[in-house]
Image (tube, helix red, strand yellow):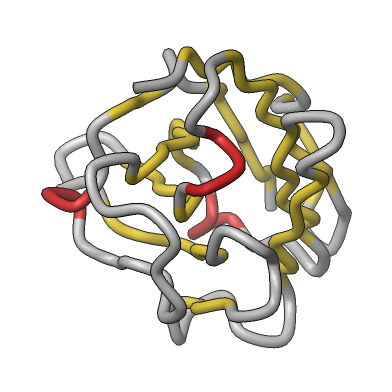
Length: 128
């Protein structure tokens, strides 16, 4: 497993941008699918985006396609989520997660149950 620490959340107006970062420690980061999830009050945790171990394959939820971009820098043990054209519906706690149990997967995992390491979360609030 890896230890994950998110940063970059905050309050932004609709149409604005934020970049989330997730710093990882642990030897398995470089072989793991990394994902960003979010959870709004009263709702289930949902996947936002995921990226495979080498950064060549990505997955995006339909609600964020064309607006969000996930990337990773394995040399820095960091994964990013660039969020553009933010909407009030994007308001949630955003979590970084790693799927370390099955490494070197080409197609990035997407289910909450596939991820075994989680950060503490960072709040993103989009005002209208």
